[in-house]
Image 1 (spheres, rainbow, N blue to C red):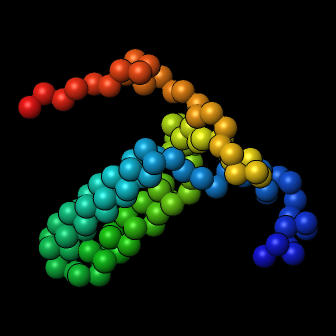
Image 2: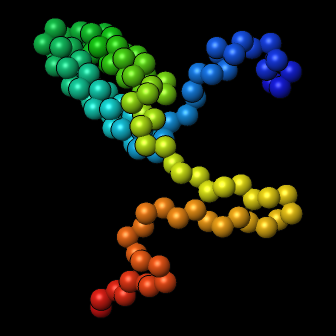
Length: 114
């Protein structure tokens, strides 16, 4: 695959291909809601018309719509990126960890109540 990368235009390389964890959670929830809604509508429509094919067509439309909305990493699924730790140096020493605004103060640990 690496032999193809020099021939790929920069406009294609710059397309984001990641999704954060919160975005994955929301995409999964949207997928489930859309599939269940289309399944219910498809079942009702197929029951009323007495054609199983109507149920299958409506459910298939729901799968296509939910796939278009959730499989691609749209910008709404990339709103909360992770703050990664800095990479270790080549000599194996780790740089000082970055402090992210935690709820505990320096040097003090929070005691749990029994």
